[in-house]
Length: 78
Image (cartoon, rainbow, N blue to C red):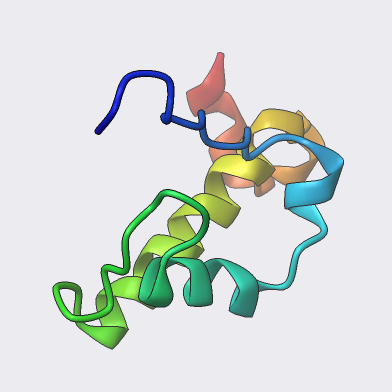
């Protein structure tokens, strides 16, 4: 890359990114976006969806409350 052409990725935790449909993330992985290349040829479809699910799980983990954890698992958090 040429110096100064790198664009930092968006945070997964902004309202804009959290409100994007999962298809937007899948499409970005598949076809690339801005300076990010397409990974569709390298990553199988099922794995791309797994990445999308992981991104959503990371987003949820940032604002989760103890009340969202099943009662039988809450003691493991303390």
